Image (cartoon, rainbow, N blue to C red; front, side, top):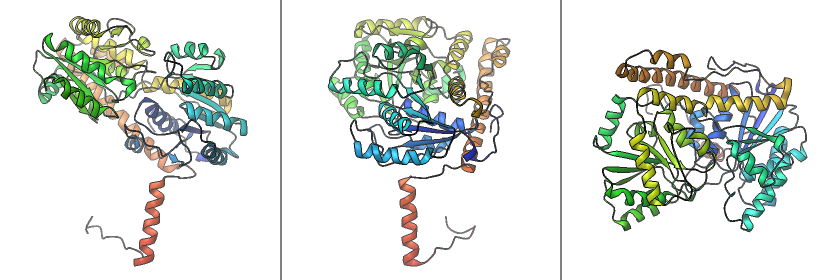
Length: 491
């Protein structure tokens, strides 16, 4: 384990068990939050198991991220995200009861409305478990209250009555939940979905110049970037409209990073509007987002709703200014004009364009501003989120919970040391310091994966693994056992 995490060599069965329930590992902040909480809590003295369904979403899944973090979810075919599924729900509850039976210290940490519902039933069937509902924003609050939304609100009210803690990612979600009649104020706790900022090092002139040259941007270009799923929630059509509106305002360039169900529709809209190719580019899903962000002047988010927008936190971590529609957690992230601009919800394309132009022209890009944004991002970082999570866990389990001491990756003394250098040298020192912090965090992650391999979960519902074993057994039955290749043989 990392030095900031206490090593714990006791067998997994002696540790407090944390079951994370999430219907599907869809691309998005909720899944990232779940995987990071599960992976890191292992190194903090807990046994963590992620229980998920097999459903796929148009945006894809986060299987690769789970593998990288050393998380092997228990995949239950019966665990589906359907609003009403009595047979599947009953089977899911039967499997979950087997996992918690005989375990004195159990926390069930649910993510999403369906998981809240299943967790509430499990709490009623196994009263000894402690139930935490993680709320990643109220996606239907403030929208038209159709029949489906009213059913969802009713289900959340019922589920909240069984919960020990309602964990929210923004303070605003507490007031929204209470206004909807969901839970009591004393149930709510701030449990932000901490953002891993390891790879999002503050930009430096050297890396910025290299990135812009690789992407074909001219020095005078003002590059506006939006990162996120191309899905209805993110409203990518607003960025297309904005790009068209600002096409005559100078050398603006727009970049969309992310894939999803609306990617083809966005590309078709660009073709129909006959916008110049250089004006707006759709990169699709990318694994090198930090490198791409180094070339940007502004990160823009025009979503219909958000919980805690991770994209904005990552941009601030790199020292970039941000602008976003003032939905939910956006108002908490943008604490001052130095961070960026919160765009009024009723702003049209012309008003949004004015605010974007104003933000780019007035934003400071000196070292002090870069560091101030980085320090703001750390307040929403992974270590801050884990500290909130552990505080809730310890309050629920009392003496059964392990004691931990979390330290931030980006240390304040590094910031102070950088402040003593001259401007150009300070940017380069920042680059070196960020690289060392990233290397240390990646080493910690490797040790975390090793710890999970030493303490595997008790059952494995991974359908692909079962199929692989079945295929191997059939092959051996037909051809006999296969011998291993010699060390220098074919691979």
